[in-house]
Length: 83
Image 1 (spheres, rainbow, N blue to C red):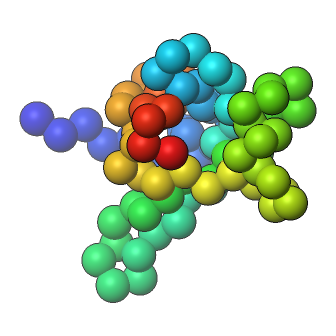
Image 2: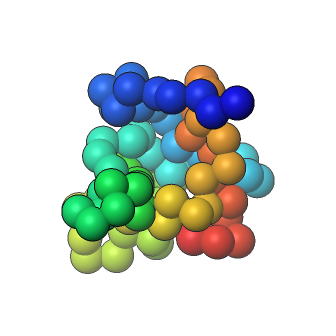
């Protein structure tokens, strides 16, 4: 059974890695114009997270491939090995 989530319910959700590191908050999604599927999630990095700041580099946001999203509930959990 597929569970559908409205995109605006995701905005502001905390994004964490599978091993417990805080990355930041969900702000947007990158969607394929051809298939309509989500390609990546866009995250506003937590300024206190060393991992998020390392991933961010010179960019304002972090882009995480949708393949690495493991779960969406109270938090968005991503697999650190796939980012």
